[in-house]
Image (cartoon, rainbow, N blue to C red):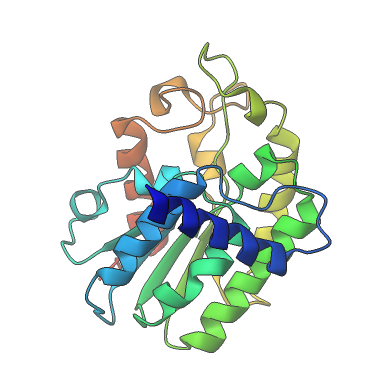
Length: 229
């Protein structure tokens, strides 16, 4: 327990150095979980040329080896993670020289009221660092998913973020070619007729059901055209 507390303390110091002038919280929503998962990742053997799924709890919750029928896929989702957290741990991902990275991140930043321009700045920095640190990697940046606030257990700090999600997704699509990544539009494919996430895809209006994960996997297989392998 003491080791975990010390690790979180140094994580906070590290994030403070990255964002000294920030007036908003840049730590992942679950810092102790973040530290524990990152420590486990660093202990894993370094295998190069694999597919890496990178993101927060929505990515972490997917059984990607089964969903995408590829037992070599590496899951690098960490529940509660934010764009600052991805930047902080990108070295662990890049040392594996992945063939492809599928990134989905940003909704937790919005729950902290991080400005759109800061989230986009971080996302574009992530793209640049991936291209410079692992030039052979194909980067796929996925749109932030829609939410559905009609669920009784919908997390309060994620309310009223729909407009911000659209702004960020629009910019991610706009700059894809310029920054040399492929944009995958998940957002529109998860919407119902009212502009919310379809109820059947969500457990709480934010996280996904198994059907939601299957739908996501089918989108990835279709959008990448040539397949995931």
